[in-house]
Image 1: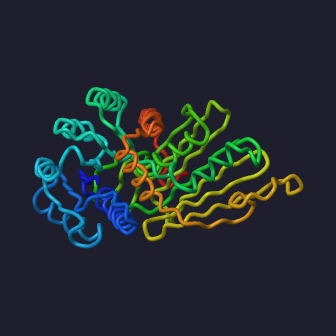
Image 2: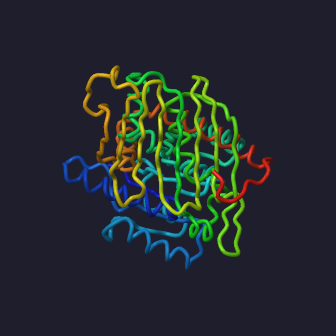
Image 3: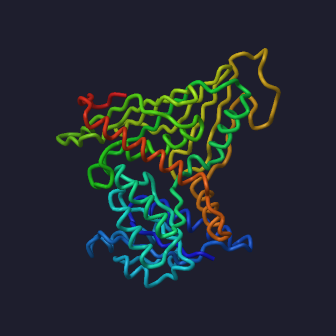
Length: 362
């Protein structure tokens, strides 16, 4: 079994990674095939003592029963409690701190890493991480549970099978109110770093390499506060396959939405990802524009409304841990994460020179 070491106990580390790891540990143990060794070790090397105590309580609450996580305040304390030969480090720090943390982990002999998205905050940092991965012989997997979800797999099969004709356009809407977290945390410098890495990676996976056509961010405004570039973002891509993609994320929206619309020559597929950890069911609506020439019935790809369970993050971790255990590298994950990070860097540069966009503009 492999033991998790979660570095960074913010929203991603305590609220998502630890919870999913606890579910995975309980489930695989119940089937007689234990995969995750608990307790996980969690730390936040940036936190002061009082902050660390609060994070420790949150980690224990979100991870599940007491005993499923041991929280400490420094990376040195955390490394003293794990064996590098069996440790999997989950790096959940802000992107600008990733290289330093990964270098320290590699220096202590940790070779298996799961890194939160986006992989890096700049092209220079990305290049440095790529060199570090090669020099230290690291097995790095970047969190990409959208692309590994059951919902994405169904979209991928529709695209490759051309049951509705060639793919022409992808439109992604990722909207949610994010006022409190934006006001109280500093991990994400712009809306580009919040939701877009999920959808950008999925678009590249479905339609292939792309070039940036347009990108703009707007400010988040609430009462007497204005947070630059955190209100939302609009990104347009031109894929070399001929497909166009529009990615939209409004972080001041009054409602939540996580939808992907794939427009084909003869129909559409509208995918609705789970909105939060409160529910793990996805939905897919397949519609043919020409019922007379609609493809024959094929179960999960029939025209209509399909609802199915899709706990993508837990499934993603299971796949990564099984690959780590067997020594099988996840060949497609890291190149896709690098391509996603580079496009994000290009979009950041574009937004930095763009004229300000009115708040709430999509």
